[in-house]
Amino acid sequence: MLRVAYLTVYNGIGLVGWTYILSQMITIISTGRYTKLWKEQGTTILAVQSLAVMEILHALIGLVRSPIARTFPQVFSRIWIVWVVFDSLYTHPYTPFNAGGCESLEDPLCTEEMMYQIGVMTVMAWCYAEIIRYSYYIFYTFDPKWVPKPLNFLRYSAFIVLYPVGITGELLCCFLTLPLIKKG
Image (cartoon, rainbow, N blue to C red):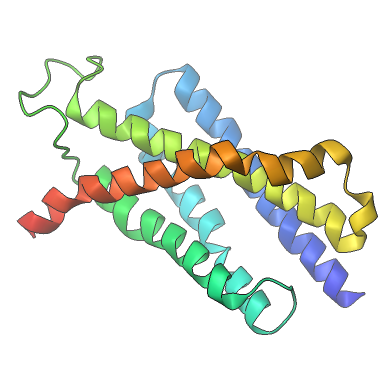
């Protein structure tokens, strides 16, 4: 019973965290403040994503059935993205998209604007994937039969779109840090 209570609280915290980030992302997108993503939400994204490190521990001690060999790389890659890649990109914005430069940040070909949009795309994919996942786990922890059919469908179908979008965003962000690494 303690296991169920703990996992319910853990998954509930993850669900609330990613739902809050999603609500803030919708505001950022609707007001066109892409450049403010990290300044406004960086700390929250770091905290909520860092909480996922517990999933490695959960798998390691057998609290959940997830294999550590799959859990570790999934969690670590996201930790790398938020702590190293996003921080670098948003602190020292530089991208190779438009070598001619930009006249203004409103120009859709602007190097910084393109980079910010990729960051927003990545975080939005994470939000939807994690909200679905944590919602599913809250029900599943009590009884797999309690999972609503639409949620079960989303859990096993939404990833078909969300994972490629998220991974593409992650890889593009990594690619965009290459000039920063080269500069030192």
